[in-house]
Length: 385
Image (cartoon, rainbow, N blue to C red; front, side, top):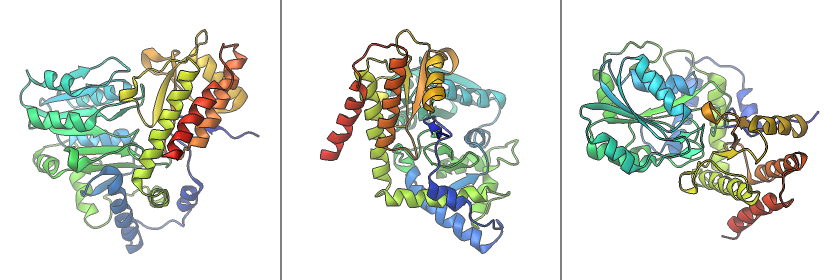
């Protein structure tokens, strides 16, 4: 029985060390043992966020944490800006509209990033903006928005909070929450953080806490003030995902073993470059420009003459290589190549080799080995530096 080669943008493969850590005997979340686990682990995760603020853990998917960020900071009728460059940016729009916020939608074509010029022009005619919501890494298109620059624009032109969805890139992309001026930063467990689904992580700036303390909110389970109060005691207000927190501690070990988070970031950048070079060598189109390409996921056009879902279905059935398809109007046109978390250059070489095998099955015209050679050249060049 061949193993499934999971190259999705989440959930992603789980390291053996993390699996073993999650098999730890169950403990109560109201014990000193849990307090030590919670405090030590959340302190170690601060490096991934680039913050000195507390890391709050919610027993939920990332979407619940995005909702918490919205409902705790904005009241019905208040003005917000939502930057959307794809399907998951539209999640923020839906959340904000559900709670009755007055939403100004800055929408870019799928495959394009939001630039600082775009945001600056959009904000000029607006006033009294309570929050600006943005997606750092758009999973549906493989775009990495220039969050540092966007944060600067928000600070320059408004008094708004800057709230960022980092679900599909934190753990694989640089984040300097405090230095850049992000007020709430959110991620989830099942992507670059190398864990199963079920744990959301977020951090809140002092500015945002000042706002949250004054906001009347229809939240109980998602009340961030409650999470802050319990976090000060090394606990959570409700039963946490204890096994996942044991796993998160092991994730921190793996980051340390790699040589620190800067090396983890470098690995993701290398894999991105390997994937992009290989597809270009095979004359297969990429949705995004190099400048704004994600280090954790690449959106790849279907080879000429082949429908994307047919191609990835064939790869999975024959070669057990599992990619995600396109979303929205990109369904059937692209496939999404995940290279985040527990993924290494050798995995990229394996996947490209199997893509080439699949291309031959569809009589696609290319020089066999061209994609593999291009990826190898990128890898070898990085080793020589």
